[in-house]
Length: 353
Image 1 (cartoon, one colour):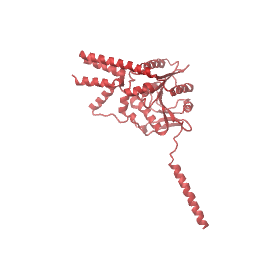
Image 2 (cartoon, one colour):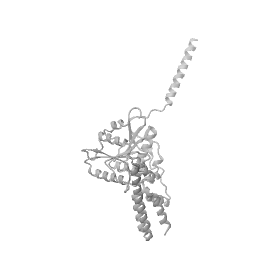
Image 3 (cartoon, one colour):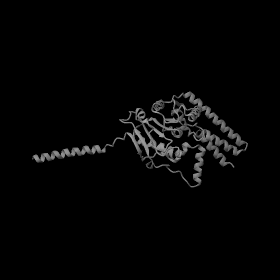
Image 4 (cartoon, rainbow, N blue to C red):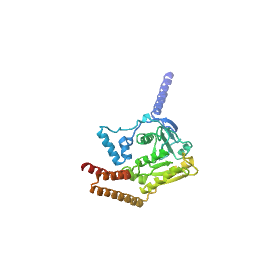
């Protein structure tokens, strides 16, 4: 009887242990924190489809020409320009539990080919509750539409799958040539990135190669996106670029623009103190004056209407070649804001010999 009791007790204990182990095995492991090198991802996103990239980054007439070319040559755009499993990323995640509202995220576009976390940034990012991610082979030698932009989108999509994110603190940034690409990404994808850290590199918008995206996206960029320019005070050429870029933002009614100074610095990655100030500025919501924004938009719409009226007058004089030149200039300047009118004019020219 004693032997049977011991055996029965052992079975109960063993069964309990197995159930406990089984329950532990069923719980998914917590996502890793700290610095992770050579990370490979598996997920894609429709926002990185080749057609969507072209729709957002190209002007309306350039996008239409691309589609016509492919149709004429029985070609199609690849669904995705990249296979994420073939790419490598560096990821740095703050230690401890995520913030109550979720982590922030900084997708960094480098000018160099390596995937690297800049020296001294880890502690600042941790203090701000920000995950850092950057892709390898996304430097200045890489193609913008085929690699640099889709790599940034794949980084965001996969980090979002692994970690809880605060959508209001999802940023894109870069240094030098990477910063110029980061601006194009922020402009084309304001539904993903709420801010851009522009470090020692920027361009005017509404001028090649930075075309305006479709109107709904651009309106969102105007009122929701935060831009922070961060350039060394001795970095003369990028400072001039910053001035031209900020002037274009004023012309195009972009509300959330700020500048963080870096005294005694040249063309170099931000030191931790300056980075912290820039991240503080990014976290502040844009101060949008609804009346000023509406008035600014009306001015730009009137200017576009005036340009289109000139096209109609040119066509009335029979100068079709001049009409196409004027439409190309409008396409370059107004991009997605003029999409409907441009495509209508193209259809008229194609229909009438």
